[in-house]
Image 1 (cartoon, helix red, strand yellow):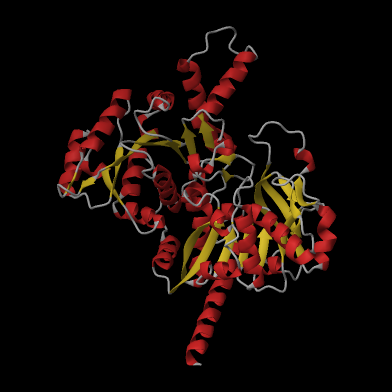
Image 2 (tube, rainbow, N blue to C red):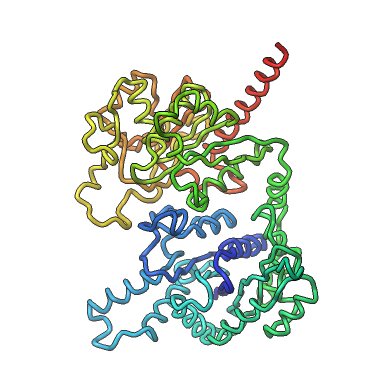
Length: 551
């Protein structure tokens, strides 16, 4: 029988419940347990697939094509376990399931209500990962939002019922709260945590463990006060202080004996945790020997969470090269206009060692991305394009190298005479936006002796996709004559997955999203080699600067 851990948050949102859940999973897995994590979000969207990145941050795509909350990215990175559709649930999907049953008459004419129908469906989904895989030892369920929100009440009621129906030693409640530091008073305040726990207890859930987020050390007196007023042993009140790297959090919790007490509360007898490799990863992240600067030219740069997996992939990729990858955020619209010529681009990218164009949708910022790609191509700056980045690279090369002056994408300029990017055949006529793109993992055949092959070291790979538009095969021959190598194709040879410029130090663009599969202990090959090329470019730039100074 699996054990169940429920993680809730109070006081304010964005406290880091996802990272906390991922860290718990990391520690339990290090103890030899089979752990699965899931995220329950209270919003009414069926999934985050149609939500703006400014609203929700990155949409994380799983192997099976599920469009999920970005916290599932944390779960996969910290536990190195590939998740599926059953690991993310929203209120919208709960109600969609119930109303579909009601329309089919499955409730036999009964009145459909929040209790018991909504709560029963939530409880079914709590159990589902363990039912589908009997080998699972622990299921960790994160409840999105903040305790006290109207939207999350059905989920909390379902948890209350679930815990009553299970043996006490099979379920645990972990509550994450904020312990703010008031600078004017020069002290931390425990009252918000007390109120948050009181709100949770009023619903019928007594937390077993508290994680107290704070920018300052909490101290024993404050922990004892929190324990006293929240009806908890002081040993079950943990400090979750701000850290330099989120990858430190499992180690910090382990130092506080969290995993020991958690396993004891759940009646789990486990081996001692093996954290040696994780400690090496953290040490490498915190002790780089150098820094390289990568420009991320995108359209959602105001909210960094829109590119969360890319940020983490650069952290991973810096580890084998012993460098810190400093990300320089450039709004692609700032690279547009008559005043943005070669000299201006040279100034903007003067201390940049690599340029990345991430994915996105819509025509906003496209000219700026095209300008950045042209600069990278002409000046031999390492370049990596992802999804929309590949499509923009096709447009730039089509115009400036192949000679297709009006080359464009049917997504942005339907009237273009040279649609080097066009809508996938199976996407034509689709009206619904949610869950209708090319989603999830697809195989890709790689050309031998290509840069892509040198990165992967394999002729067949699998990567995750999220897009509607593809390279137009009508133009492949013209691009190949101009020196472009299409080094990755779908198994049937009909879809371009990877393109590169063999004469460039590093110029690769891919239709898929490699950032979704990067792990701290296994940096994605494309990010790893891209950063390696940026390191070489940095060293070359340094040598040229020294030579100029000497002359």
